[in-house]
Image (cartoon, rainbow, N blue to C red):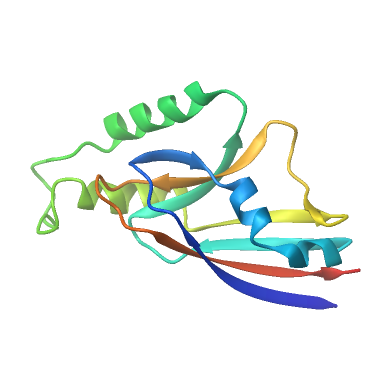
Length: 141
């Protein structure tokens, strides 16, 4: 049984939904050693999230951002946590809705995602810094 864990620093990106599948795979040469396994990807932040969804049409990413901005608006009068700016509390809510981790099967040294699936970094802050993820690989060769 193989276990490997690695922290990966993602580049700072603008607010929105960003595909990071290739970036993660490029940082994990250890994937090649796993014939059958699981990758658990966890983000170490409370104002960004991870999800898996369509990776082919860029309008999906735009629609995600539009929908979440309408569903969780800035400057809502009932927010109490406002000291870090109008995008902070909505960022926490969006992250809670989408979640802080995804799990992906590994088959023959690669992520075994569907034809149109990719891993997204969902950046919910207007001026975010680089983000950290932890990837834990488990499997057999």
